[in-house]
Length: 209
Image 1: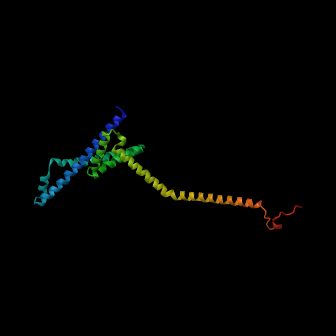
Image 2: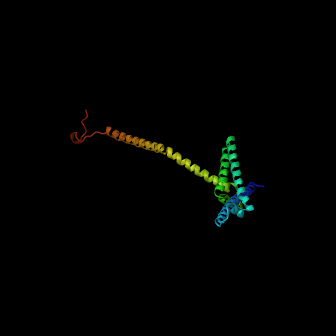
């Protein structure tokens, strides 16, 4: 199997994984919120809270619990892996695992929206023949790295920009002063070799002794 085939298979796997994660989280949230709304409706119609809970109870109630457990397990796993990589000195691995941890937490926070979006990107990427370098995880990683580099450059310019401007201004002033001094020397040099005969015998040269 070539590297491109392996990369394509990885993108398919990532797409399926993200879609399942997002779909499970979205289904869990939908079932939970729908059950709560139905229970409130039964209570408003005169049923007790216990009766309302029994009326809306179903086997699907296990899905929200499964999605919550899956989210906690994934987030915890990536957090532990990030710490392990940092301890071993693998900072790139630690950053990668931290991003995966943030993705898992973000999927839960968006009720599956982030997972479904990432899954769609990965599946399109795999169908187009892309590899893991262009999947949703690495695209997000590249975007964050670019934003971090830009912020770092802006912070550096903010701190050191004034010193740089002062140095440039000082260099310009030094150049101007040097040019002015040089020009003055030329004019004085020319005056030293000249003699004004205008007031001597009508402009005639003085007599030779």
